[in-house]
Amino acid sequence: MTTTVISRGAGAALLVAALGASATACGSDGNPLAAYPYDAADQISFSGPKEAGKKADPDKPLEVTAQGADGRITDVTAMDATGRHVSGELAADGSRWHSTSPLAAGTHYTVRVSTEDEAGKPGRKVLMFDTDKPEGQQRLNVTFGPEAGTYGVGQPITAELDQPVKDKAQRAIVERGLRVDSKPSVQGSWYWVSDKELHYRPQDYWPANATVEAHSNLENIKISDRLRGGAAKPLKITTGDRIVALTDAAKHLMTVYRNDEKIKEIPITTGKPGFATRNGIKVVLAKQYFVRMKSSTVGIAEGSKDSYDLPVYYATRVTWSGEYVHAAPWSVGSQGAANVSHGCTGMSTPNASWFFNTIHEGDLVQVVNSAGGDMELFDNGFGDWNMPWQKWLQGSAIASDEGGVGAQNKPRLSPQSV
Image (cartoon, rainbow, N blue to C red; front, side):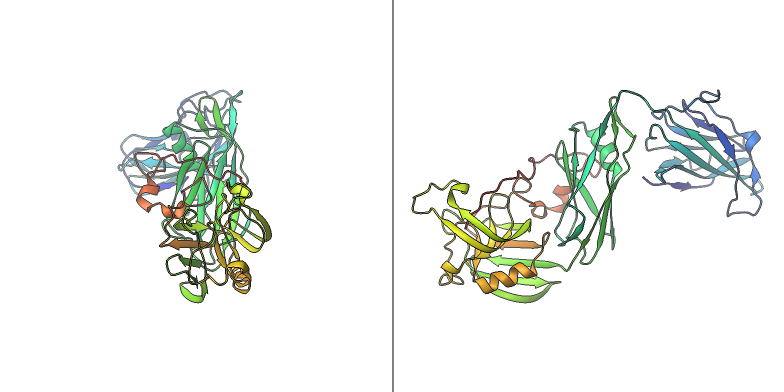
């Protein structure tokens, strides 16, 4: 949420109205526009309950109104005790300010109002009030992913909700409350993968050596009549160098780039006919020094001509369905010349060791010129980068008029292919 709104207009005294709300205390403090701003205490009144101990209804907006014709509102800032700002709009003539983001329940607010009279003399008033905390409402809890750590520039940020949110207006409230910030700053957007999961990515990959932080401003915010935001643990990750492994299945060659500079070319083999490797951009999901790969985990019957049961080393996983980049000493004769695998990208053991030690979770493997289909967007790993940016924005509840829902993400399967 944002929030200091500054403008100039007309009005003389102030009426601060928390519609259905009341203030429990007030005072004054300095204003950088003048050394001695006047205190407008006798010019301010509040609508709503006046009795001591009464609290404001968090579901009603906050409003500040100037009375008369000899003064104007120049600035209003509303903030809760945790530092969350309440966004708002100030009329061009300075006659009225009203909140445009919801108030939180069970929360203490401080509202600072700056004014100016017809002679240009500034006034200031600080108001404080508490909001009520409705009983019997459920909480929407959010879990950010991945775990804290350092990742490649292709790692999306995920938000898992513990309850489904289907209504677009409710999704907009949730999305506005989930903040992702990066240094250096880049444009990004959430995409509703399902009713319970969102992914966040920039238009391009994250910058190299960046800091990315995600947090929720939803706690105690009304989402529906029976649902309010719950607490959420913030997330902080960093990115490393920009590592992209471009795999050309037709040329049987992988070219690895670091920060757009070519650092190695590796002869490879990819999926043979009937098992062709998926085209598209894939995000590294995990690395395992040793994996025992069995054809039965990918639906190939034991004893058939395509069955296998092999110890595999230096295995870098790029899909949940079992696609890896790994050492394949049994196919060295075909590497650089033919595609003979069951869908994985195979290379010599020394090259696989180098790749394994160079690549990290969140780095990118892009396959081109394969006879296979396209990488799935959400249900087989992170295919997020294969969606054009304008289409990605359509999956946001606030970035376009139409929200988008994709397939449920990341089934935790464990088959492997070689």
